[in-house]
Length: 86
Image (tube, rainbow, N blue to C red; front, side):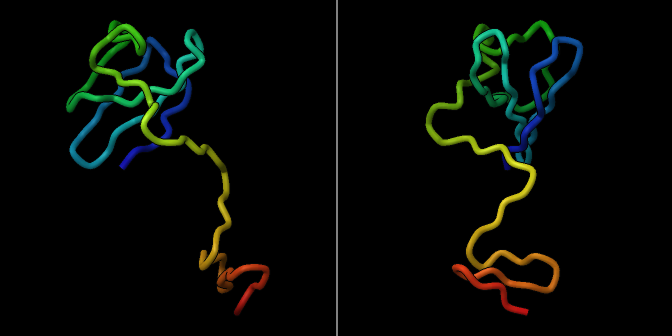
């Protein structure tokens, strides 16, 4: 599963496992990258120049604090079209 890991920071370490993969925004290139490597990388592996990072270009990236969609559950309500059901 991909997860948003914020803006790439050279002082941070990023870890990818078979279950989790970080996506970072690289402000130098204004693009999103995912860790295409199982293990931990450090600041010396810069997105856009390191082969351990791959450009997010084969799927869309949606970053949001909240997402409301059909049949989503919000508290005890279920959303369907324009209606909330309790």
